[in-house]
Every structure is written in C-alpha cells, then in structure tokens.
Length: 229
Image 1 (cartoon, rainbow, N blue to C red):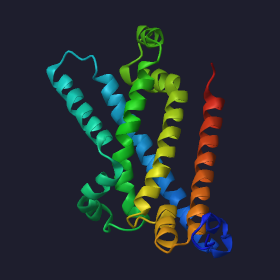
Image 2: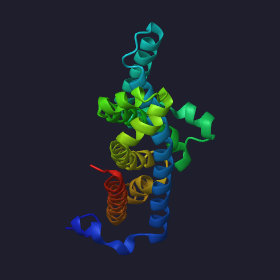
Image 3: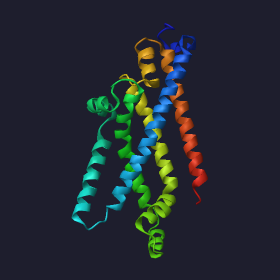
C-alpha cells in the first residue's frame, strides 16, 4: 500500500506544519469561548423568558411564550451547515465578511443559543417549587426570587448545560471551517483533505479531541465545586 495515501500516511507527522496547526487550534479555542459566552447570556435570557411565561393566564404573555418557543424550535431544527448559508447576508452585515473565524460566530450563536435556552428552561423547571414558594412567602420580589433563588439553585445544571453546548460548538466550528471559517476545521479540509495530506487531518482531529476534553474537564470541575448536593 502506498504510504502517501494508505493508513500509515495518517501518522507521517513530519508532513504537518505545526505552527499552522497551533494557530488554527487557537482560532478554534477563541471562537468557541466567545460564542459560548454569548450563547450563555442569550440562552439564559431566552430560557428564563420561556420559564416565566409558561403558566401565564394573559393572552399576550401566552402569545409571547408561543412565539419564542416557535423561534427556539425552528433554529434548533435547522442543520448547522444550512444555517450558515442562510445567514450569509446577515453575517456580512454584522461582521463585514463571510469568511474567517469572526464570520462563524453569528451562525454559531444562532444555532446554539436556542439549544441552550431549552436546557435552561428544563433546569429551572427542576428547581423545587417549595423553595420558590418559601421565597415568595418571605416577601421577595419576582426578580429577587430569580437571581437569589432560581438561578443559584439551578446553577449546577446551567453550568453542565453550557458545557454540553460548548462541546457542540467545537464540532460546529470544525464544520464551519470546511467552508472558510478558519480554525482546525479549515486546516483539516484544505491543508489535509484537499491536499491529500492525511497527517494534517489526523493532527487536527487529535487537537479537536484534546480541546473537547479540556473544556469537558473544566466544566465538570466547576459543576463539582458548586453542586452542594
């Protein structure tokens, strides 16, 4: 079997441009961190909105809950690769380009924020109603109940949720890289697959796995430190 195309070609790491790999890995990391931060805020707000409006008797509030729910479900249902294409014009308006790492952020946010919003809503639903009723009985305002009881009580689930979402975002960044969004995905596709350099594809894959494991470890440690159960 030809070593340039066979199984052994994946391990010819002398063919890897390591500085390019480190630069691509850093692009993947910072795009993931920025996207995750935005998703955490938007997802928390959307999830809180869904939770707070779920049992309202007001027709307007019910309509708001329905509209937000539909928007969340729609964006959760669109495959990421299609969402990137749909948002090309929007991305160009927001960041001024449709290529490069920055151009991936809007699509990443629109894809992951609805997903995290549902996880936030579920986390809030799992908070003991007795704890919320006790806070209300003590005269706490609704906002005090939210930021002093609801969010703290659900914090382990919220952190666990954003960890899962971040892991998904890492996969999305690799997918976006295949169409010019930079990072390890673009490196693996252009310098690896298109250039018939299997060693680069393997090295990029290993780098992505390591990044995922690091983010998972950090998330698990945070959850363990704040979970008092």
